[in-house]
Length: 313
Image (cartoon, rainbow, N blue to C red; front, side, top):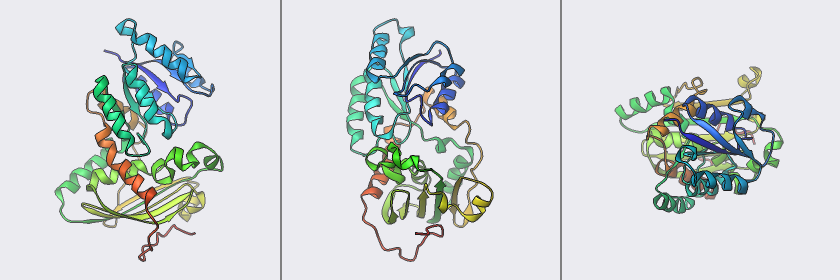
């Protein structure tokens, strides 16, 4: 049976992946909201989508549907709003009788999970999140291989994704709204590392500013050096020469893990898993949120000689 969806933040960067996932799972988008009205993309999916620029009117519409015929009710609310609004919009979804499918990070601070878990119990509806790297075929295979191996692994993570001046002006450049670099661009990689190598045993942060962070994490089965940046000047020379604006690399025991392909339909795969009752919930999201919060709160540590090759300042 086709499910009815509504979406919050339909004008945002990540929303098109959710729109495609809704369509490609055979579901129906019936309502959308965004404070900005540059949302002509909706016509690619349907001419029947009710659109709102005010969250209050959107909320009222969903509540009206909840009280009407069952076939018109919203079953899922997809949340693509700024990070600091995610938990509020999850609560809205549950209160209008729907499940939530929320972009990561599900919340910025780990204590915000508590109220959401209570509301799940009260409403009997669930909150799901997008941990798309967990459904990447190459990474699933890597996890299976690692589970057969024993001992500790040495891991290096580098993720550089170029952003212009707009980034620091927007909510993404405000740590209290985005969670800063570690949360905003790093949380899906930290979730991946925890999923692959087990829980956090200790952390060190070597460098932190508004554009980049570097540090060390000890996990149950890995020692991880990591570097994150939104500054194009941190790209390696080979990437710059090739005209690339993004560089991602994960090595395990000196061997590069290749997963640059296969990203186009990962949101759809997560939606398929969620609709089949196998989605990722608060329990899955909590460890990476606790880790990124600890990274934000950590005092800087001496480098211990582990200076990342791309850290130029």
